[in-house]
Length: 222
Ligand code: C5P
Image 1 (cartoon, rainbow, N blue to C red):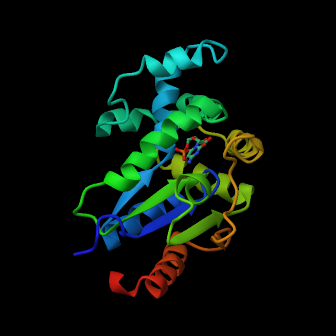
Image 2 (cartoon, rainbow, N blue to C red):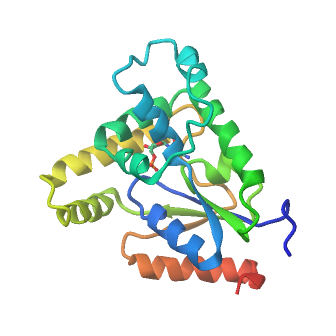
């Protein structure tokens, strides 16, 4: 049995629509890892904050939240992927007080996730740099913004939404800018992370690379 404290930590950071969510999910399933989607925390607060002013008293907002606000079910989670919630989440993610509030919750999970898992994979923007700088293996996934926009466009097309490539591209460019330029915990590659450029790789190819690296560093995961 693996020691609870020593269970491996893997981080996967990268910009919006780089494929890291899909990859983390599949890797977690294959290796029996707990999958911590760190963006969900910002989206939950984004949803709760919708319609409120960012200049309002953010501390009061945070202290008024329900204790188990991050314990969500599937249908609530589905709602979080609305465009307007993503935009709100990204605005809140700039604020230090919001980041500290969320970081505390994420750190709790890092040490207390269920025993049935062999380890944990975290996916987001600041996993390898801020949430788990002690991680055993770190990845940074990247792809050209035009390619990420094209992939998201094709993904949304299958859902028959009314969509427009130019708008998706504009949105991704602005999200990248917000994530990279923000003062607190910006999106950046950890010094010890392996960077993978997915611009011209399929998800399957990227997963193979990620798995190969994981198995070379954690051979008992086989
Ligand atoms: O990854 P996802 O798109 O669900 O994240 C929603 C928003 O939360 C992002 O636009 C980003 O600004 C923010 N975020 C963050 N740090 C993380 C994960 C997400 O700032 N670790």
